[in-house]
Length: 449
Image (cartoon, rainbow, N blue to C red; front, side, top):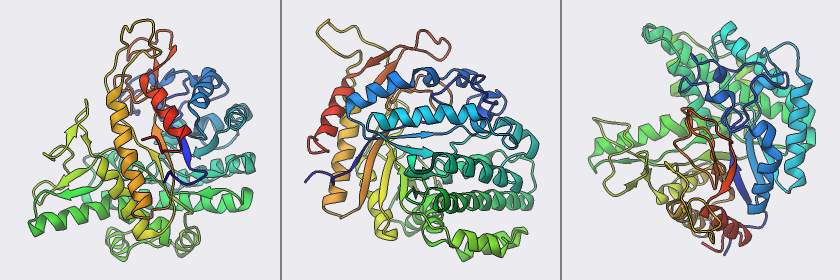
């Protein structure tokens, strides 16, 4: 049995890791264009892989693989250069063209409204997601986008990996902040993100009633290091905190009582109208990312490299195909909503080979083929044996892009981009062996794995 009819195949990227053109088209600087606030503290984000100018030819390559879905993020600072105030019509026109090109090539756009960034002016003015005015600016931005695109977009994600987005915002709290004040700031960050997600659901209902909204998480199963009861309990608690608390809010519309009690002790009590907004804005599906699993013990609750039964990638990440089945099965069993695997992939340090002239690819990335194939085998088991309602499978970065730290050393793509960390070179695109493998998988709807 292949995956269901209408199964989505494609890839996922973010705007800051691909677009570049940071001073073109009326765009304002985002937090990724400021070397002091961006991840990696690099200026590579300013050019990235130049998708802003090359998206048509890149999409032709994706179409060549058979993609029927493409997930990308809209750059908030390309729509609102200051984060609020005056809208940049040129930015909307760019995404009109971008989405139009996708649809013309048979790809359904899956739009992420925010991927770890925000307009730099907004960040400097309000300091981030602990300030409710950032939520209010985001709500205005989201309404502009959803109203503008209407039925052209059928799927939205309010935030990339919302659990990770919250953690990143929390990490920006100064280290010398007193504990109780830090707990208060954390509560506000958490609440404003969920209030924003609820707002997106409401706005989609108003301006794009056919569109589905999914609350995305980064899912990482944690196994107990031993059968010692304390290790088992720690693994369960880590899983709840890392992922299931967020999913429960997305699906039930309610905060856990333990969380509300913790917030009250820190001096934060959400307004009743906020709780009603979240309660009435439950998600339609659950998109998630999966890359690796971890190990928990009483002494070391979060470990990503202590599993002796698993091999590791070039960058030390555990390679665990069974973990992806655990991810989708546990989510579907608990919540019953359709699950969409929208990020999965293998990052590797790669350089072009010098193949003989008969080869069509510049890199023989059999390790990537093996990685993705093994994960798809487990997803097929989840569908056939566990009866998971799986919407699709999108790989992370189908074309080489900047990594989350702003380097090109960690490559995920089926398509090689000719640039390095320091040198943009010509940014030409070349196909890897995995390009042709994934094309066959898509053509067979997953039967050929």
